[in-house]
Length: 399
Image 1 (cartoon, one colour):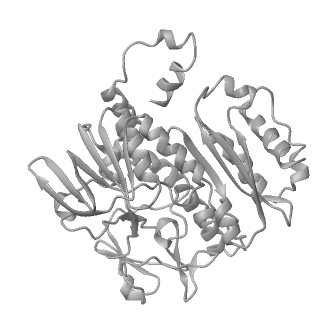
Image 2 (image 1 turned 180 degrees about the horizontal axis):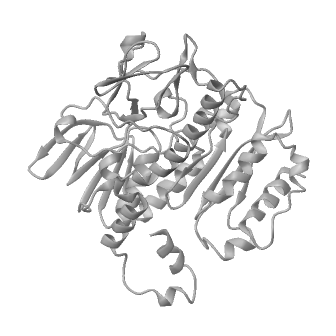
Image 3 (image 1 turned 90 degrees about the vertical axis):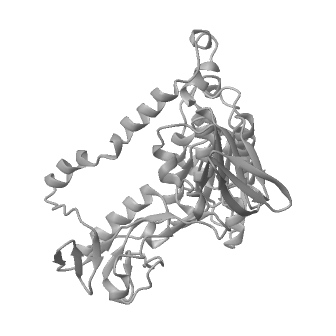
């Protein structure tokens, strides 16, 4: 859908576009990308590294012991828990009984519902609302808070909300659901102080919970259902043999951060002294795949000030470069950097606009490397690319 939208923005190419999005072909392409949820393609990678794969339900059975089906595996040094999270359902009367979709069902659905209600205006909620509106659903997005994407910059949330509305999504903030019921094939949600909302399917995207309920957590003194709290080397401080990586430790619910944690944990188990993650938790690099996209890393203006940083925010229009004439023409977008004035370094950046995800890593490197603002001036972006927005930002900053 993004490719089609981009073609339609380009004179000459737009005239060559005939017809509308082929929904079934788009879903088939999705299945190709996710390999129909078949992970066998990863087996050669495991085998090449001497990793033995055991397919079974796993449970902790005391220190360094894991039951895998009928077999008990005993580790010499460490056990790593990487069980992830699952969707949580808010305490709404009747909600569980309507059998709502979670992100899992939404990501692999074979049919597009005529009407979809999305409960939750976080990352999953806005991405799925955008996707299903593009595929032809009538979408209503309900968020109990005052705005979408509560952890991101205000302008990013506003632009995403505007983009969703432009795509036909009924975006409602301050919407508190009081009850849910299914009437035949229809799901009906009652709202406090507002008319009910109906749909053919309901997607709940209102938070996550760690998958520690049925893994034998109690056998090692942990509380089932709670995240496994770890330190910077990713092991439980009170159980140095027990590591937890990825969503299950609650630090950063992002695939790429899980990979980083795996590297740190593995290095520590092997006796090395890995440096801890520089960008973790809410500061992790992150991309929200809507139209416009949101790509952010480090602090927002608000979080920097809450952290006691003497921060200054500097903005530039993403359309103010020559490169913007060639891609994302006319799509609303903003670039913001957050500068620690005391140290003269970048501590945060947010980009919004069409396909801005690839702009993010330069900001990530600048933050991790604590590159002085004066030095950034000499990182000259090529003409005519959208990366020239960095020149605009530095000029606005006063360099």
